[in-house]
Length: 207
Image 1 (tube, rainbow, N blue to C red):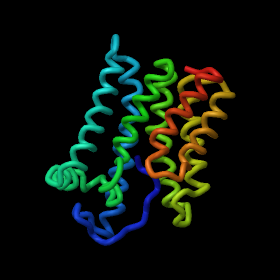
Image 2 (cartoon, rainbow, N blue to C red):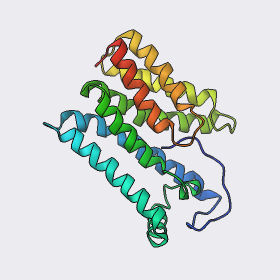
Image 3 (cartoon, rainbow, N blue to C red):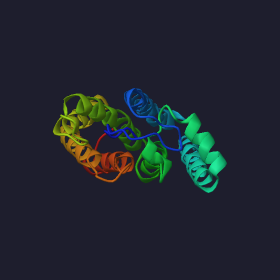
C-alpha cells in the first residue's frame, strides 16, 4: 500500500495538493499499512470461518467501492475527499493500494494454511512500511532503493523468526519479500509480498 512514492504534482480533481501534504499522507499510509498486519492474527484466531468471512468482506467491500467510484463521478468525488489524507493522486485511476492489499490478504488466506497465511500477512503489513520509511530517508530519492529492500528483508526475516520459522524459511522469506516488494507495477507488491511469503512458508516449513 505504501510503496515509496515521493513525487508530487499539481492539484487534481480530487483535491490533492503538492508540497507538505505529501509527507503527511505517506506517514498516514505507512501507519495504516502497518496496522493492517493485525488482520493476520485476527483471522487466525477467529473461530470457524470467521477469518475467511472477515477477509472476504473487507476485500469485497473494497472492490465494490472501487467499481462504484469509477462508475459514478459523485461517488468518486466523495471518496476522493474522504480519502484525501491517504490516497495518492495517481490512485484516482485504477485500483488503490488499500484495495490491492485487501485482495492480497484474502488470496493468501485462501491459498495457504491459516498459520502460514497469518504470518505472511504480518510480514506484508510490516515489511513494506519499513522499506518505505528507510528507503525514503536513506535511499537518495530512489523510488525503490537498496536500503528500502534491505529494510524489507530484515523486517520480514524478523517477523518469521518471531513466529518460530526455521532458519531456511527466515532467510528465504526475507529475500523473497524484498524481491516481491520491488515489483515495478503500482500496487503489485501488496499482492505479491503476502503470496510469495506464504508460498515460501508452505514449501520450506514454518509457523
